[in-house]
Amino acid sequence: MINSRTKGASAEREISKLLFDELGIKLVRNLEQSRGGGHDLIPDEGSLLDAFAIEVKRYAKVSTAQLRGFWKQTTEQAVRVGKVPVLMYRQDRCDWLAVVPLHVINSDLSTSNCFDSVAILNLSAFCAVVREKT
Image (cartoon, rainbow, N blue to C red):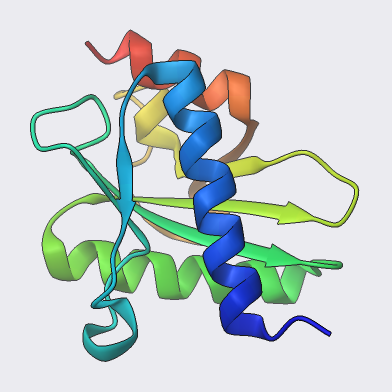
């Protein structure tokens, strides 16, 4: 049986590798996250992902209520460091998904971090949005 900390670390390494393969950006695990309550992954400074506070979740199944709770945690951590919240999550036997505020996709849309003002993107779409921002 894998404990949740081990599973979380494994998920962070998995998404870091996938984002590196897609964007060529190295992400490192935030080893201070459990003490300081910060986001999970830290990109190279000045990279395309530097504006984002990335939180990673990996669960067997994710309910809408859980997703809302994850988003609340993600936004609180992002606001603390002045970055845009991004929640990367994956359920068992499913692909990675990214939850982002709508304004990340289109700056004319709501700048709210409320869960009702988010988009859920697959990994390829998230990477396309990140590339578009340059």
